[in-house]
Length: 164
Image 1 (cartoon, rainbow, N blue to C red):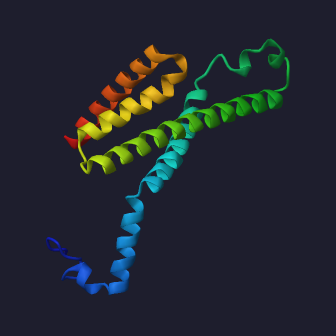
Image 2: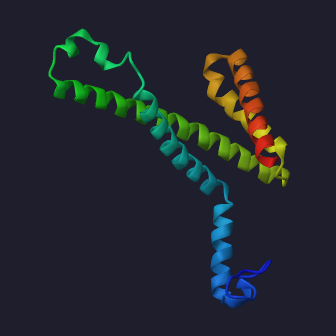
Image 3: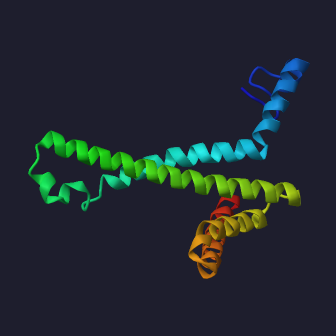
């Protein structure tokens, strides 16, 4: 049974490790805290989550290729190929979008956190504002402002809930 602050085998787990093992753990922890690694992890996680979400949502889409009159005259095999191709395209598209959003948000939050040397609600709100503004910037200044506000509010709500 583990005691407070100890390992299951008894004693402190850090004391049982060699100096080399402790150094390796510190190196791994510092790598995991670096901004490029956080951005990469957020991008990969966003890609996976977006692809899964795109696959799930495309399975409910009724206005897809099955509604094309020419396709309805084809064999079931051809129809299935068209549906699966559409599902793949939507999955890849959503995956890319989620990856971009995750990478921008994670990178901006990490940079803000590094600059401020604090980990608080302000970081996530500022990162949300930056992300929303950047993503909506091509649509004009009003859209960028609305994107900033929307992402900031969403980030604040999520972070407030998680920090509970």
